[in-house]
Image 1 (cartoon, rainbow, N blue to C red):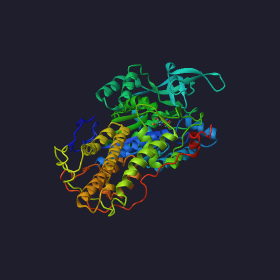
Image 2 (image 1 turned 120 degrees about the vertical axis):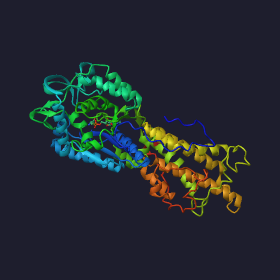
Image 3 (image 1 turned 60 degrees about the vertical axis):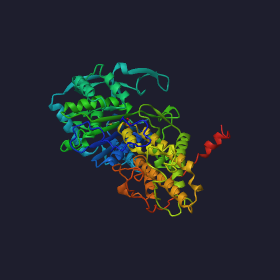
Amino acid sequence: MLSLPARCLLRPPRQPLPAPPRRGSSGPGRRWLLSTPIFYVNGPPHIGHLYSALLADALHRHRGLLGPGPGRLATGTDEHGLKIQQAAAAAGTAPSELCAHVSGLFRDLFSRAAVSFTDFIRTTEPRHRRAVQCFWAALQGRGLLYKDFYEGWYCTPDECFLTQAQITERPDAQGRPCKVSLDSGHQVHWTKEENYMFKLSEFQEPLRKWLQGNRHVISPEPFYQVVLRWLEEDLPDLSVSRERNRLQWGIPVPGDSTQTIYVWVDALVNYLTVAGYPDAHHTWWPAAHHVVGKDILKFHAIYWPALLMAVGLDPPEQIYVHSHWTVRGQKMSKSLGNVVDPVACFKQYTVDGFRYFLLRQGVPERDCDYYEEKVIKLVNSELADALGGLLNRCTAPSINPSGIYPHFSESCFRKGSDHMDVEASGRALAEDYELIASVDRLPLQVTDYFEHFQIYKALESVVTCVRQTNGFFQRHAPWKLCRDNPAEKCWLDTVLHVTLECLRIYGILLQPVIPATAEKLLSRLSIKPEERAFTGLTFLPRYHGKPCPFEGRKLGPDMGALFPRLETPRRHQMEIKGLRP
Ligand code: ME8
């Protein structure tokens, strides 16, 4: 955390926004290549997939507002492997058709969700095949692959090999004993075949050194500790191919038509493909910042950095890890029939409403629970009532008949150390100075939280300020002030000016999370697109003795409620009233 003065009522810190931490050797001008996992196409997207994409999108948008980039955001679909081959066979369709269809669902979802991706990669694309085959050749060229008879447990739903210690026995649906992965609960099968092996064991020490020298590379911190603990255990070599007669749906091993490249090697290389590997990746690599779910941490924090080191490339600069969404306390699963469709959520809560819910309630360190009533309550209280209500109150024609950004009067709201003295401070009260100090600190706080992958905390601090501003408005009851009395008009305009200034800051800071609502808010305040960046963001310049470009400006057109309240579905109302069991 940046050290911010705990309480700074009179002279809030006017520090410039800090440059976010630079970790890699990505050259002058900070670059970032944000990524989401690439998603399997054996089923349609759900809210967990959307959450990963929204986290990456919010980070990407936030950084874009901080400065002139350059940044990219890549997402896409993971289309090879046994799991997809089997899903296509079960659906009686060709794998390529299944992939095209489901990949399209992901792409549509992310477009609809306003995920600002700059690249959408499909692992079946020729550019990716070429990258994977070059990567393989580089591994082989460095003598890090060898052929061996591999024997062990394989979990197709997770597409991973497991040791004896990682499996357990549970009854299946028919009550027969069956071996499953301890971690995911998915069934495993014994496989025995000749594979190429990667000398992962040689990278145990380099991985440890890398982590010890980069304490913030995996965040949140508890996940960093998890990875360090894994590295205390044995790190066996990794099987990186499958026999082609079992797995045809994948990229063949160059020069060996009997083997297919293991789907995880294939998938991980996508991050290099989008960086331009093998020809043009040096501009973007290693400025990679991966957002991943905790289920795939080992692949990203152990296998991937080791593979990169093996071909002479740096590990990614940053790995952001998040936990999982459950639904009414249960894991989402097809068999339980509780998989939540994000498109239905957009219809029910609007895109921004659902984006806000996931990012405000999602705490990366721990699993979070979704249920309808929770979304409706949160979104109504924070977006519709607190934020929307505030905008509505200070722009209502009855209170602001000229429809302008009114003037701020220093004589009503004095800047000085003796603000506790009512005479000296005009009409402002101690709480009003606290509000100014809080909103002054807010951009720095929000940036700090984003950089530490705590978007939920950034939103919490914005909401706290929104509530404080509502308190300010309520306290001074501008609707009771008389415009015809010059002294009262002066104060009334000042109260409106301060409130609009607060709203301007909230609108700007909320752009990465609720882009459409923020755009509506900022347009209503007549804030031009070039005035919406985080750079040069000065709250209440007049209070600080600077000119305010917005003063006297005509407000934008009234487009109705900023965020219309969501209705509780009828069936819930009946349940609440006890009309339904
Ligand atoms: O693992 N809550 O793809 P995948 C939150 N193709 N996030 C969730 C989630 C939940 N309940 N369920 C899934 C793969 N996710 C590989 C990745 S990357 C080189 C290859 C999110 O379709 C989370 O990000 O199984 C998780 O890591 C990812 O979806 C797994 O998606």
